[in-house]
Each structure stands twice: as structure tokens, then as C-alpha cells.
Image (cartoon, rainbow, N blue to C red; front, side, top):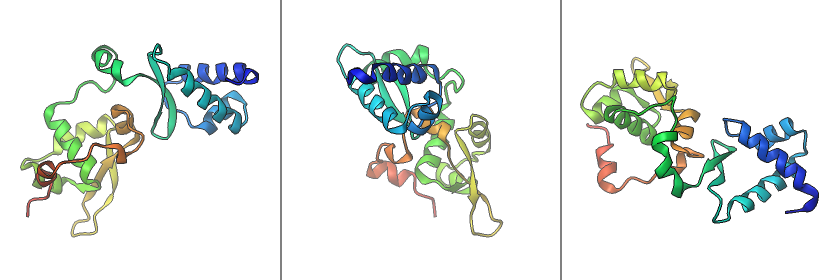
Amino acid sequence: MDVNLEKEVGLVESILFLESEPLTVEAISKISELAVNIVEQCIESLKEKYASENSGIELSMITGGWTLTPKKEYWELLKEKYGNKNAGKLSRSAMEVLSIIAYKQPITRAEIESIRGVPPDNMIRLLVERQLIKEVGRKDSPGRPCQFGTTKEFLKFFGLNSIAELPQLDEEENERFELAR
């Protein structure tokens, strides 16, 4: 680490520790009153610091911002106790609807029902309340039904930076998610 940046690195680290939401470099710059390029150097320095084997945390990019998270190898052990308490656990049905929306977005209520074979109304209401999904537009078809997609809260819940980081579906899973004709 650049000796001249020790205090700045400490300041950025403290900000990341205190903030509960991921922060962009620009947001960290504004809070710390440090130049963007200095914040970027601090981020690189922190990434190196947390890369050591004896560190239990790492600097992660989630929803376009930086945040401190437990290293993945420790998270499996810790998530039961320290998982997102506000989100709670989702039922199997809610996870199924959420998966369909995540992989097929934008998607309508009727299209979800076509895939699942049962009405998704209660699950959609629950997922909207939890802010994991939202209305993202209207389909250009008769009745102009609402289309649903995932939110930033969804990305945070699953520790993803973008929807592109979702695991790829295999052929069988992909067929299951196809709309019934």
C-alpha cells in the first residue's frame, strides 16, 4: 500500500464498514471528500488487503457498488445466523415464481401461470412487498398486461452485481421455464 494513502484507505474502509448499502466510487468520493481517482486507488488497496488468507471478509461489487462481505467460503457457515433478516426465508412457491421472473423477465402474470400451471397472484404480491420484483412495463398485447422484472433488492438478496451473473440453466431446466403453448 502507498504509505501516502494509509489514512485515505482507512477512511474508505471505515465508510464501507459503516454503510449498509453498496456504494459507488462516486458516492464514496462524495462522503469522504476524496478525489475519485484516490478512492479507486483505496479500493484496489483494500482488495489486496482482504485477499490474504487470514482475512474473513472481502470487498465485493454488488448492484454496481462496493461493499464489505464475508468471504464466500465462510458465508455458507454464517448465512443461517446472519442472512438478510428483513427478507426472511422464501417459500418454495415464492422461489419458483422468483426464478421464473429472474430468468424470463419481463414476464406477465399469465405467462408465469402458463409455466407453473397455477396462478401466481399471492406469490407476486409477496415478492412485490419484499421489493424483490416490480412492474417494469406493459406487454404490447390485448389488455396490455403488466410485466414483472427483478429489482436491485433482488440482486442484493442473492449477492449479484447484475442479472447476467445468474447461473446458466441446463437444457432440461430451460425447457421447464418455456411457456406452455
